[in-house]
Length: 436
Image 1 (cartoon, helix red, strand yellow):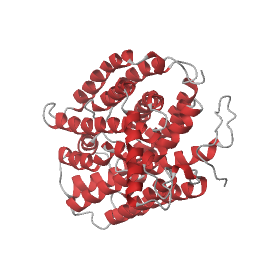
Image 2 (cartoon, rainbow, N blue to C red):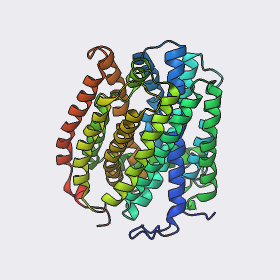
Image 3 (cartoon, rainbow, N blue to C red):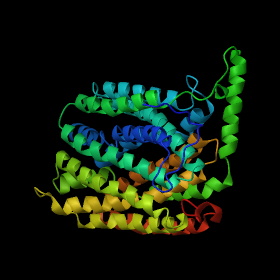
C-alpha cells in the first residue's frame, strides 16, 4: 500500500477519473468514519445497552435516555478535539497519531465495559470514556475530509462517501447488536474490536507523518514548546471565530434540536407496545441503513446538478417528510413487511436530507482549521441531537401521554421552520453547485 503526504495535490473525481493519490486519504477517512460509527452506543451498542438498562436494570425510557445522553456528552466537546488535532501534533503528526491512539483506546474501553454490565455508574463512566476516544478518531477523519474536499472542490462527493461509511457502520452495527443483546456484553465488546483494528492499520500504512515544519522541533525547552503550542491553538481559535459560520451552525443545531421520536421512547414503543424483539429491531435497522446507502450515490450525482441552497431547501422538506412513514407502524408480524418498508423509506429520506447539511459544513469550514472548524459545526449538531433525543422522550412520557403519532407530527411540523435559516445563508457559500 502506498504512503501519502496530506499536503500533496489530490485531483478531484471531476469526470469519474480520480487521481490515484485521492484514494489513500479517502480510504483512511471512510475507515475512520465506519469504525467510529459502528462501535458507538447508537450503533453496535444501542440494542445491547437498551436491553441492559430497560430490561435488566428496570429503567423507563426517560431514565434510559439520560444514560444515553450523558454517554454522548463527549460529542458535544468535539470542538476541543478539533483544536488539539489541528493545533497540537501528537507523535509529530496532526492526523496519524490521533487516529492510532483513538483506535487503541476505544478498543480497550469497550473491553472493560464487557466486565461491568450490571454497575450503572461504572458502565456510564466507561461509556463516556469510550465515546471520548472515538470523538478524536471521528474528528481527525473529518479533518481529512475537509482538506481534500475544499482543495479540490469535492465536498459533496466526499460527504457522500462519509455518509455511505457512516450508514454502513450503523447498518451493520444494529443487526449485530440485536443478535448480541441477549448475550453477555463482552460479546459486544469483542465485536467492536475488529473495525477499530481496521482503523488502526489503515492509518498506520496509508498516512505518513507531515513535513518536519509542522512538528515541534526537538531540542526546545519545555517553556518554548508550551509557547509554540499556545500560539498554534490561538491561531486556530482566531481562524474559526468568523461570522460566516454562525448561520450554518444555527441551521445544523435547529435540525437536530427538534424533539425527536427516534430515541429511547421509540424503542419502548416498539418493544412494549408493538412487541418487537431486539433481534427483529436489528434486522429492521439493517433494512433501513441498507436502503440509506443509496442516498450517498443519489447526492453525489445531485450536488453537481443543483446549487447547495436548492439542496438545503429540499433537505428541510425531506427531513420533515422522513418522519411521516412512521405513522403507519404496526404490531410485530413474523416477516414485518410494512415495518421493513417504513424503515427503508424513512431512513433513506433522513440521510438524503442530511447530506446537503454535511456539504454545507465542509464549505463553511475555514482553511487551515479543517478538523477544528468541521468539528465545531458537528459539535453543534451533536448538542442539538443530545437535546432533541432527551426532550422527545420527556414529551412522550408526560405531555403527550405516550402517544407516538403526536410526537411524530410535532417533529415533522417544527422541522419545516428551518427554511427561514436556509433563506438567510450567504449567497457566496450556497449558490454554486459542485464542480463550478
